[in-house]
Amino acid sequence: MEPLRSLILAAADNDVIRRVVATAPGSRQIVARFVAGESVADALEVVHTITADGRRATLDYLGEYTSDPELAERTVRTYLRLLDELAERRLAESVEVSVKLSALTVDGDEVLASRNLGLICEAAADCGTTVTVDMEDHTTTDATLRAVRKARRTWPWVGAVVQSYLRRTESDVATLAYEGSRVRLCKGAYAEPAEVAFTDAHAVDLSYVRCANSLLAGGAYAMFATHDPRLVNVLRQRTRWYGRRQGSYEYQMLYGIRPDEQRRLAAEGETVRVYVPFGEHWYGYLMRRLAERPANLALFLRALVSR
Ligand code: FAD
Image (tube, rainbow, N blue to C red; front, side, top):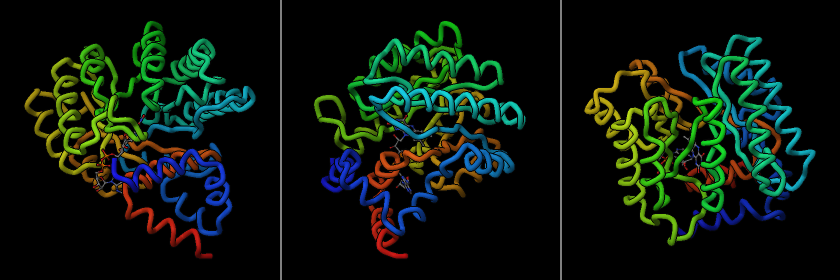
C-alpha cells in the first residue's frame, strides 16, 4: 500500500488527530461534500434531491466499532426512525439502508449484532425496502458473512458486500453468486496486510473483474460499487456479454463523488444507487475517502486552516 494512503488510514484510528480535525474551523465545509449532514432530516433532504432525478440511494447512519451499549442502541433506534420516515414519505421503493454490524453491537458480540440486524430487517420489510450489510476490515469478514447468511433465512433480500482486494473474495463470491442474491462488489477501503489482501492496484482491479464475471454468470443481483471509469467500461461490456437486462444489476457510487457520471449512467437507463452517509460520527468515513484520493487531502488541509 502506498505510504500516504497508509498514513491517512492510520490517522483514522488516532484520537488526537480526530479531535484536531473535528474542531478545526474549515472541516465542516469538506465534510459536507461527502456527508449528508448530522440528522435524519438532513439525510432525507439529500435523498429527495437524489431520487428526484431518477437515482436511488442507500442511507448509512455513520458509526463503527463500539464498546458503548447506549451508542449501539441509539444506532438501532435511528435506523428504525429512518425506516418509518422512508415509508411515510413513500421513498422506500428507491431508498434502502446500509448498516455496519460493528456499530449495532457491543465489542463485536455476534449474538447482539444478529438480533439488532434482525430488528432493522423486520422494519425494512414492513416499510418495503431492503438492507445491505457493509463489509469492514478482514478480521470481521467471517462474522459478517455468517450474520448475512443467518438473516437471509428470513429476509432473502439482505445484501452482502465483498471486497476485491481480499485474496479470499473470489471464493466467497462463488458461494454468494446465485439467483436473487444481492451482492455489492467494491475494491475495499481498509488498511489490510499483504497476507490477506492484494497490494498492487492492478491485481485488485483484475480480482474485481473476475468477481463481477462470477456474479453475473451465477445470476446474482450484482451491485457494482466503484467510481473507476475503466472498471465501469468493462462492467458495461460484461453485463451485455452475460445478456443481463438493465435493472437486473446496478451501479453504486458514494455521495459527493462523480455525481455527473451517476446522472449520465442513470440517463442511459442504468440503475444507479448513491451511498449517502449521515450522522455525527463522520471522521473514520471521511479519512477513508481522503486516503482514496490524495488530491482531496490537499483540499481538506486548505479547508482546515481557512475560516
Ligand atoms: P479507486 O481506484 O479508488 O478510484 C478510481 C477513480 O474514481 C479515481 O481515479 C477517481 O477518478 C475516482 N475517485 C475515487 N475515489 C474518489 C474520491 N474520494 N474523490 C473523488 N474521486 C474519486 N468499502 C468497504 O471496504 N466496505 C464497504 O462496505 C464499502 N461500501 C461501499 C459502497 C459504495 C456504494 C461505494 C461506491 C464504495 C464502497 N466502499 C466500501 C469503498 C470502496 O471499497 C473503495 O474504497 C472506493 O469505492 C474507492 O474505490 P473505487 O472503486 O472507486 O476506485
